[in-house]
Structures are given as structure tokens and as C-alpha cells.
Amino acid sequence: MPHEAHRTTSRQTIKTWAETRGGHPAAVKGTGSADDDAGLLRIDFGEDEPNLKRVTWNEFFKTFDENDLEFLFQDETADGETSRFCKFVRPK
Image (cartoon, rainbow, N blue to C red; front, side, top):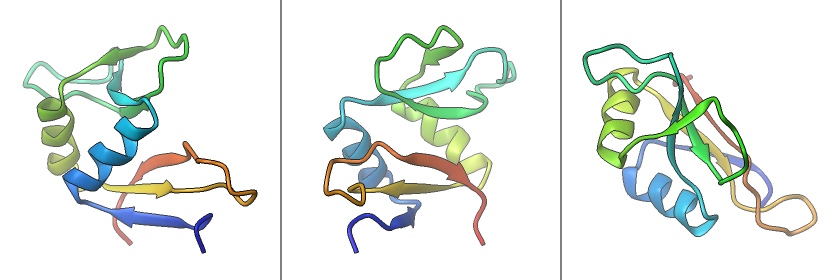
């Protein structure tokens, strides 16, 4: 069913999903380390969220890989609208 959540580690799937919804890679300010760890990852959809900073896709995926994360996402809501639901989770 389209409104069910899916998990992936595919860089292309994550990037395409985010960009088709107007999103871009971001991290929570103050959560990264000095050695290129972006910190807590987010997809920023352009709302006014002063605690987020844009990062490059390279920075984003470096942190994603180093933390062994999966991307949990939904394509459509239960009523058929495009969904922006997503979060970063540890593998089961």
C-alpha cells in the first residue's frame, strides 16, 4: 500500500524522495563534531526552522553511513496525498 512506510539505504532513493518534495539535506545545529560529522540528520523542506543548517549531500551521506542508519519514509498519505513523513532509524 502506498501509505505504508518503507526503509532504504539507497542514496539515490533518499535524494530523489527529498528533492521531489522540495527538500534538501540538513543537520541540527550544534550536534555534529569537528571531524565532518554533520550531526543529527534531517530533510529540510524550507519551513522556518532556525535550529537546522544545510549540509551537502556528501556530508549528509558520510554521516548517514558512519552511523549505520536507514531512511524510513512514506510515499503517500492514507488519503493519497504526497507524504513528507521521514526519519532516520537504526536497522532492525
